[in-house]
Image (tube, rainbow, N blue to C red; front, top):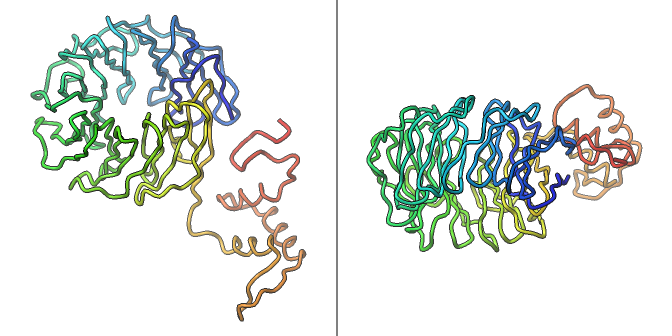
Length: 406
């Protein structure tokens, strides 16, 4: 389903419960949508210029947006601005809520990151200064620290409440565009144009022994949800999964035909989704590197892609639309009636002698009655009821609320 703007959609994110979507667009608005119906939930959040990003707080009650050198916080339910816009002297590149939603951090071309009170909009600390632009900022899982990545070849770790540096700078040999804490907050992984991604002790700032190396620049590096693996994107149009302890490559490189604009693990860590400048979004098995679907084709530059919190959908931002795609993972084991249904639909089965024999329509109708009248609420029974429903009136997919007539 397309969530339409008047100009390019630069960012699209699910709410933490997966029921809503917030989009940011060059049309100077951010918008909040019902993730099931695709209907807008309120008036657009209006800005003075293009909106480069928008994201929900962890409780889903607030939205943080960025436009040029300003960041704003909104009430996610009624669209009311909660603070006066906060400003940098240069363009804001990245902005994130703290895990508890009480603070937010911004990173800017003005060589600083800043930490703000999300309720008042007042600065919590002084400027977190680098010697070149700050490309990324993230809170630690406990919200007590902030890590910043900069084109001055360094990553720095700060106290989120005082702005005091907690370690010496973590040094690379070229620009660093991405830094992230591990899920337990004990490590930091960094991605640099010096052809390496490196691991650091988050408490001491000391480099750890493992490192990831290629013959091309790294664009990003991020931990899997369990912290055991690292997902990287690089300038050779590939995505890779590595062992976070040994630095060994775990799967074959996942290749695209254009720049990797975004990449992330699914919430369970079993899949990877990447958005590319080749006009596609691709989904792979995170353990084997094998594609799990055909490319999701957009016919235009794709800015980003994100799994829903339950991992059953993917949200993409491309052209003037955001789109929601169903990518369900069927649970195992499958019920005994599923292969029986497959045979009944085809009208044939292999008997014990390996010979093909016909199945009567009566068997299919009997199975249909059993499934339609079943009170079970599992994934497969829900699918079967949808499968047998009137095709003229049923929803367009098992998970959708939209009917074909709509």
